[in-house]
Length: 175
Image (tube, rainbow, N blue to C red; front, top):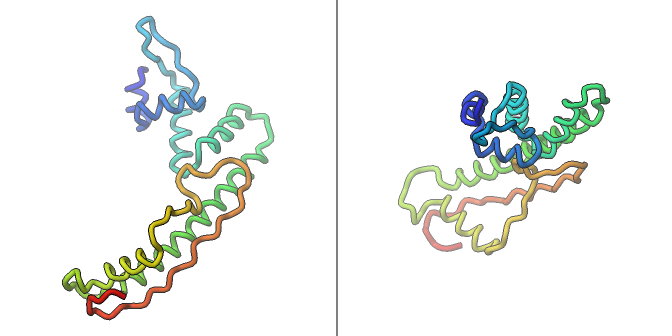
């Protein structure tokens, strides 16, 4: 099958298929005399495996390790277990960060209980106050960002402490 048919059968965009080939995750396909790639069922199966792993938020490096063991079925899978344990740890850390973010957003939402003119919006005023207090500075990456962690055990990053949100009076005055 040509690359368009492979893409249609797996749900993986053509550019992504080519990227996986460049990354060495998907073996190069044979080519026709007209230089078209011709993919086999094995390519579609491997691509579906990769797609499923990406759906589990695994990095390309993690997938590369899993594919190594998939290609060497007689090897011990202890490293696969360790990889998944580490990935679970990244996911658990990210969930904690997301829960802290949710709490912060709920607290922010409580600063404006009713619709009113934007000048008196507690949410906008609180965000403005926080922005002025924190100033413009680049945000450090914290936790597991899709595709961001690499192989090997990394020490967990401490989540940013939740910001205390106190409702501001609806006067429109700057804090």
